[in-house]
Image (cartoon, rainbow over all chains, first blue to last red; front, side, top):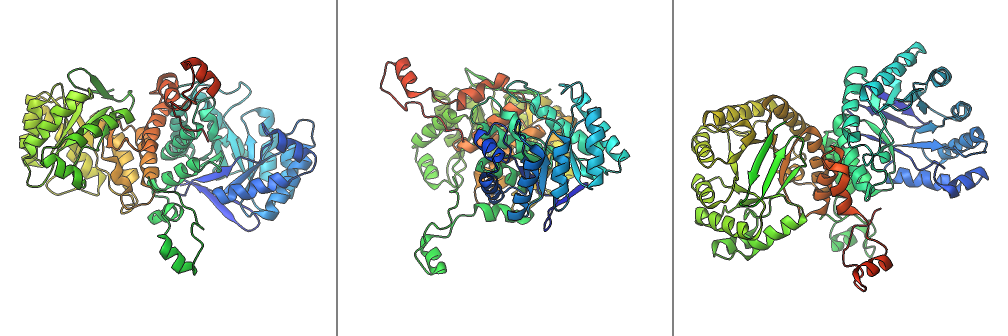
Amino acid sequence: MTDTVVSSARKEIVIGFERPFVLIGERINPTGRKVLAREMKTGNFKRVESDAVAQVQAGARMLDINAGIPLADEPAILAKSIQLVQSITDVPLCIDSSIVAALESGLSVYQGKALVNSVTGEEERLETVLPLVAKHEAAVVAISNDETGISEDPNVRFKVAKKIVERAADYGIPVADVVIDPLVMPIGAMGSAGRQVFSLVRWIREELKCNTTCGASNISFGLPNRNGINGAFLSMATGAGMTSAITNPLHPEVVQSIRAADVLMGHDKDCAGWIRAYREPPPAHLAEAATGGGRRGRRRRRAVG
Amino acid sequence: MTDTVVSSARKEIVIGFERPFVLIGERINPTGRKVLAREMKTGNFKRVESDAVAQVQAGARMLDINAGIPLADEPAILAKSIQLVQSITDVPLCIDSSIVAALESGLSVYQGKALVNSVTGEEERLETVLPLVAKHEAAVVAISNDETGISEDPNVRFKVAKKIVERAADYGIPVADVVIDPLVMPIGAMGSAGRQVFSLVRWIREELKCNTTCGASNISFGLPNRNGINGAFLSMATGAGMTSAITNPLHPEVVQSIRAADVLMGHDKDCAGWIRAYREPPPAHLAEAATGGGRRGRRRRRAVG
């Protein structure tokens, strides 16, 4: 039973073995989003704001913030984005950069306990990111690759994860504050990618007692009907013990799969969340009577097939 | 690695640990279908035929045939239904009745190796159904309840399953021909129902080396958006090692969840089945060129979100 507690100034979220799955919204990331990259670079954060609000409304319980734009002042843009998003939402954030100065800049303005994304098993990264995480008493995503790259061998990936957990402990970072990303490969390129993740998650949970996360959408890279694969992957990963993922909450199928997995794991007490999300609207004449008339279809709900 | 081989006169299907999941179509069952019950009772089998064809087209790899109609000649109706369905489809059938005389009648006309649905751990049932299964060299679904009813304790359910496997062996029925149904309770009534099934499936597979099946739709009884729960349940059960289920293939979400789980378990080689099912149609001008023109929209495919 491991609980990773993260927070904003006003709200705490717990990623935990016996907790509802934590969906971390992935959209605020200029990688592959040219318009967003251009806007962020020129100081226009309107889309960052609207993406933040839309993702939280759609079911994200945390948001990942990435400002990786070539030839831009990433530390300044990341800090600015974090401040803006924290001013309009109260979900805890995942501060995402491959540049240590940007992580530092982001952490310096962040209100609450952030999740730092990420440290790897590379020596240089361990030695720069972990002290920063320790100094700010943050939590950290540990990605199980190192100087040799991403191994296709799950044993190697487990060993890298274990090394990071041990090194984090040397800096005073407890196991509960290390969230491991076992790395998700595209299933279209590697048929064992799904089962590798499921068994690694179980193993990490049982032996290292760590929470887990991943960039879930990668599993379906190159395939048609990606949300169908992504949704089943998230349900199955939850069944294997995964406790959070960085993914896109704007796809209703993805959110539904996570909600259903929470129900099936017994993490949605009395199915209350599911019923709230998917109950059918009352018949029109009752709805009108209840609201004083006229506003039919005000609350659109998904039809049950 | 256990393979349960069933067949019709012309086709073999294997339910197995390293095989694609076998969806057994549940629709030909008059329980709760008044119109179908009335028709079957009066010798009108048109709906039985159309339901058979529709389920196979939708992705069922076997069909369950049940003729449990109060005050009707169940043995005769079941035999007639089986003969008709075998004359128009080539998928193997699951002969489903709580009346031993009906199972006997069904088996006597069945062409191929059937799956008998079902035996329980009740003494009287063991002693009448197992000899019949052995005589016809069929396979059998073993439901893990006994005279004391359905236990809420997974340990008891496992023991009942084990007893059935042992008794089957006494009659010369091999482990591979016993497909265990661990019993699925409604998650709305029992929050642990999902995890119970997942752990029982793993346990049955590891210790008894048996294939598994279940009446999957029961999990969502009483909840809104049942297909959302059913789909996630089927993906997660597959992740836990379940190898077949009796369910409704006419819900595209359910079939999609099973196909996605096959991909993620590495049981859909090169994702070929998934790509065939969900690839986007070629642009209209290319489709027209290829077909000699004009028939736009002939093959409707699901849009990718």
